[in-house]
Image 1 (cartoon, rainbow, N blue to C red):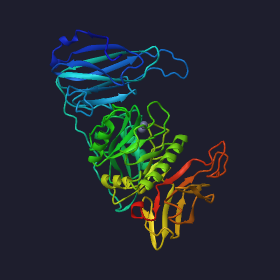
Image 2: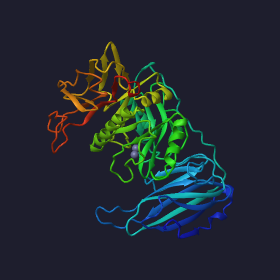
Image 3: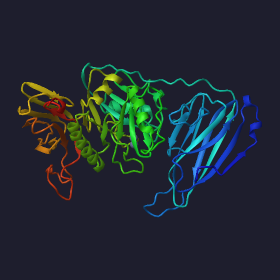
Image 4: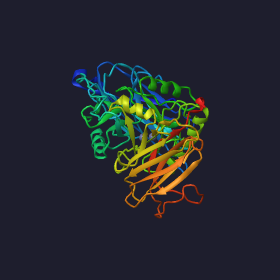
Length: 501
Ligand SMILES: [Zn+2]
Ligand SMILES: [Zn+2]
């Protein structure tokens, strides 16, 4: 029920105007959606020859609803004459619920939409009614076709795939950022400036459900800032980051966990050298919780923006999965953290990843993240080194220390930039060591274990709690026993892997 438009009226006789001298015609598409409407509703309209620009405006009613009942919320986008097939070529843009109008021509398009040829044929406006009030949702979409000669061709300026690196080194980067090309208020230039300000070496452009920002990063990247192209794929059962997409590539979002599409699209992203990273898996907003599992993931975003309780949940389930991976002898899932900054006052780079990469290139940075050779910092003020040493060997974050099961292993964290902070060492047994840093936030914490006691060790640096105390990490009580995160590392694994024992 609900999918079919109930009315289509053609208004305006303006199409009599000569095509070369302008003139326009407008089609109005109206309809009503009830509870149970499809996730996506397609409204066809025909584009004749010699259309220079398509402009769309839409609105829908917002009847009052009782507190706790979702009111009407309807997203919008458009597909061209190449069709609406999942993952097909017809995609021409998406603005979610952020804009009430948009336009597309050969020369330019509203951010979120792809400039390019306006070819004749059957196009579709797509509506995404992701919340429908009990009273239903009445929509009105106005499509205006403006006639005339097409303007010059739009030339995207994609960013280069490398910047001036320092060779094998730790590079800082935020892999989850929005601009005006989806629901952010920052221009790409403002995001690039904020990234430099935050001391970042790289960023990934991840606007929701569209690659339209990719073509604007070219002049904003530079020797000091690598810009990697990506997308935040916003499905109805969770969001995922496609990091390192070929520039201009679009990844479809029109499916749920119950459908077959996700594993196929995830494979495609990986075949192209990109990473699949479920984002903010416990975010409580509608449709934001991750329901696709982690079999097709390369990493998981356990820390999204300012530290909140859903991040605690993400770290807990990520930590549990480390134990499972150890037991089953299969690859473990690295943790990443990103700002997901949309607009001021959200801070670009808070948090971000510090990645050990061979050089400052797309391929090397993605390789470092894929291998888990990274830790998460709330800001560039936090510096950290984490190692495990035993039997004359040393291993760092994301690596394995291959020493006998009974060999003493010294786990060492050197950190600065976390005033009043508390260091926690966690293993597959939970927190086994806690030590507070001096007031200036710099210090070294050392703790001894063996591979027989700890399959892995990871570190957290926490701020004091609201009452100023460090808390006790492995105690119970009505409040969280620790303060907000300042830094979190991927694990160091200890001893031989299970398949070699
Ligand atoms: Zn999201
Ligand atoms: Zn986001």
